[in-house]
Image 1 (spheres, rainbow, N blue to C red):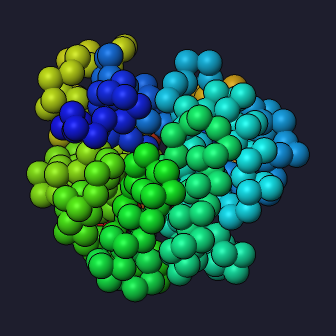
Image 2: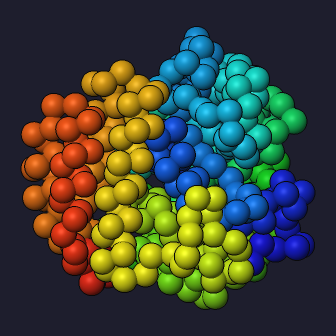
Length: 350
């Protein structure tokens, strides 16, 4: 499914599913969890949490919780939020030394703080300056530059096309489109037709994002849009094995350490979710101070448990755990019961 005409990293990427950059979620814990389900010999792009270009130059990159990384992590493309070259350039220099293989510019964040400072999706209100921001990043190193964006405020495809053409002229190597307006945030339905039209209209790879709940949705996005890859956000907190499922459909060998077929039934997925939570606690315990790791675990649980029947009950029980060992015991006991996964996902829009 990876385009031969528009390869990512000169054809080194051979797997078309990737994790989205998400604040408070796309840290080393989630990345290693999702990576544990990456099919054997598969290579894809990996994000970080959104990083502030105003803060990075003064930080010891690699020693902050948002930039912890494992030595095995490859093809890391950290996402930065910024609009000034005096911050963007030193940020990218630090990230390159850290091991970044590319840089992603956030032009899709719709939160009020980003809008106030002309970051994120607010840059879509100024196409000329947005193109200059990409050019700033491109001039700062030899790393490829990508942009994650939304449909803007206009929800006008001709505006979107003109905007992206400016990014291409500025030096963008690929773009990821989440086809919702800023005002929609995660509500409503993502307009996949915009992904299709953009992919047909420009000469760089287009990654699709939005409304992927289960692996069949990702396969459907490929079929309906012809996109060069699918980026998945919150659904991978609940179903990180989507990568295994899709790899199985594409003929990849199972992930290292996984045997048999990927989980498919509600009972199999429920058991796998329990195992994924235990894996996550192990990574968080290894890399983070307890309070910081606990905060990240609680956020992960809050985001992921809506896919579960009685997920609120799991959340309530886990709150009783006084440390990660107690939490692992609670998880093991809870998931000894079958039939916990929901059978309907259509009303969840992550």
